[in-house]
Length: 267
Image (tube, rainbow, N blue to C red; front, side):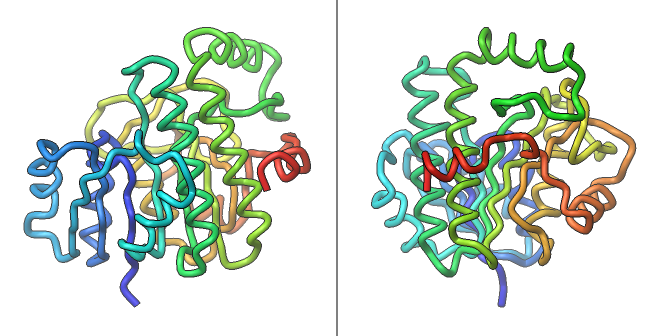
């Protein structure tokens, strides 16, 4: 069976790098974008690719409920869903919550409720957690908290809620479904394929957007990946090697988080 992917936030920078990777595998892709003027940019990404590309114009900002998200899931029939969308800091805290939290949660709930959807990847960020990671220093954790309470004070609670909800729902659905939070550090525009650190990384650092897209593609292709949180920075491994290692070793960066509390709140 040819996989079918629903890419939410299709005009975003990571999504535009992920789109040709998906299509190059001869997969079917529905890229959901906000506005019709964005359509030619996405359509051009499918030129001369063996995969099948459809572009759906629908604003994530308008998705408030699971039922609304379910309607899109039903109409596009994906096997995998990728949420790589965000307000980009535009529109204030209300828009951040509407997209990064509410729309993401609505699609997570709809995806988990749909048996034919077996994988959901959300592009989050490395600081989206409530507790200090055991492999971080106190200094790293303090810097993370200062960022979350400062410049990321609207973004942090939105992303954290989406990550926790996906984690709780994935655990409730159980085997056969992978809910993955991919958590890059600061994003750079550097071109070309770099090397990465994936899994239990340092708390701060940067990574190329293209490498985020390549890791996401690797996770989509993996038949044995389980639900997990994976931090991502620039590092010393190839993307393929890092994905293979994390999947085979069952790496999960939500270690230390209150998983029972997530279940009570979200599932």
